[in-house]
Length: 415
Image (cartoon, rainbow, N blue to C red; front, side, top):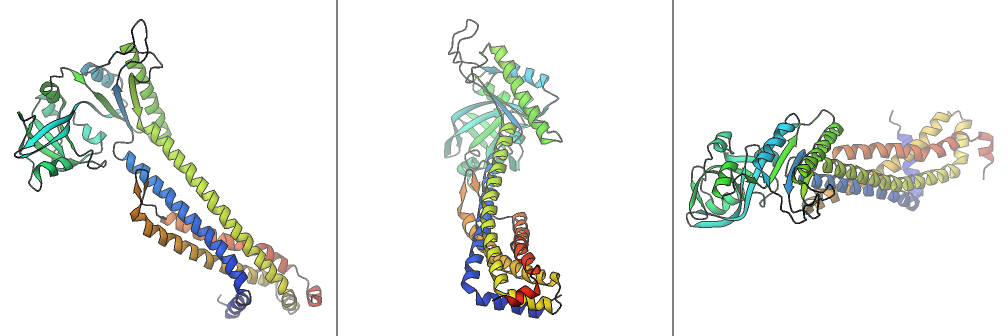
């Protein structure tokens, strides 16, 4: 129930202790401000990391081969290992129950692509239809490579959006003919966008079977990529992906007679396990930020508690008179708690306001690989409000309890 007399008492008390109340409120506001800023940057780190992982599927496994660096079973180091179609097919068959999407690729860097008077050097990559999903690509127009393109080794091409802009400007690219190395005609059937941006969109995809013929690659492939079937439990998915990664690496090392500790020869990269490690690190960073912020708020709470103890001491005689006139202990406790919560809440909301405003101003200016759009989300704001209320109650509890225990006869003797 609203009690105007109590509010008058609160403002009168604050008016008598302006500087002390200001400095105490400043410590609370600083604590909330720091907490909001830290949480905002924790969210920014998470946004940055997620955007990096969104460039490709998070649950992917990529396989590449290199050159052996160690001798093994009588074989000298320096052997160049080459993946072939048969390796891809064998792995598909062995792990078919755990695979969601799959592709092998054959790519060439710096291939010249021409359209009328426009030309440029781009990465030309032969792939299977699932490449679109493994790299999180979305179609702007047309379609991606399909199985019929693979089976018939068609000369069709899917351009990245940046590449389309370079060669076609505002002209529609679908159905047009481009040339590779000024002599091989390909028909454009689609244009895609990639979360990785212009670098990833400066590529052209063609059917793998076509790429192997055009570039005289035989049955050679450059890489193999999979996404694993996600389980209901994320940790189980990580275990499955890690086990599959380890098993694939062992299969290929056995097939190519590679030393078990030769990490350069067979490279199998598991993004799901890496994602778990990085998101675990983000949780740790968030915990540290909360710890720092809460610690700063505790310093403010101690300040509020101290000022309330001083106020109780100064009002000892007044409290004694109230009790002598029949005031209940609950009424005394309510009066002190009310004042403590009010001071804490006002100071805290000021800190919250300035923290949110600062993040809103800074957020559009912050965009790096692992830090994007630091903002205080709704959950953080609600949590901060709850902290404010609890902090005010804690700050006022000890002084309120002391006030409630004052004996009227002793209070009346107090000088």
